[in-house]
Image (cartoon, rainbow, N blue to C red):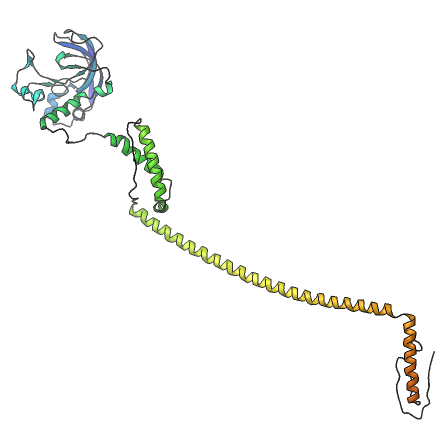
Length: 375
């Protein structure tokens, strides 16, 4: 059966090979479906090994983590179409027994067999279209395990072997490879939410908005973690211990605060000056209004007095009837006659205007005769 394979022949260079594969009696033919790249593969690809070692390795198909589908199985252990994991460590056996005693040591096992063939190391890896492979190195994948998870089963087996070798009690942590669920879900959400929430505030107001920020973080982190984990992770509470700002930001905030205080002082001075000006204007307006009212009062008093005098004159004029005037004339004539009796030599002058004398003058001039002019 012809199969295409990709072999690295020198750093960063692959050549295409067409190979005729034959299925042995204890083998099955597997079509490679998924593979994972290990750092060891990268070292061969980049040429990050000494030249002597690379000289022994090239040309070689890479990849030792892979899963595939059964195409043919002469042992009838698997059915056509079964998904299987390919165990990369092939140990030579006689009647299914290892020829080296090291394989029987629990702490070591087959991984340390000196005669083992390891794919993508001293044996062609799974960077091929089809491979003929011992059925003893094939493990059926359960239907409920996704292929993208199953392809890492070789890595999991290494972890289990290390766990067995160091004889842990079961509750210790050796190390963590890759991001944990906290890193992939909680930490990422916290970072995203924190950037989103804090980005909505100016740095100088953050200390004053602490409670508001804490409430937003608590609510949004709970919502996002539940959404991203599909309700698998529940965050009970989020506590904001403190808001730590870089020193440069702190310095900038202090400058802004000083500038704000100065601006506030200037606004206060301007407001006070405005109020003083308004006060002076109000006083001036009040004084002017008082003077205007006083002047108006005097003018009104004069007008009222004039009006009253005019009314009085009118009343007097209306009261001077002809009879009253005649009585007045008789009274004056009486006074005139009385004056003549007392001073017969007096000179009397009557001004025009009727028979009633307006002016009389006493004089003792004996050289002149009494003259009386009457109309």
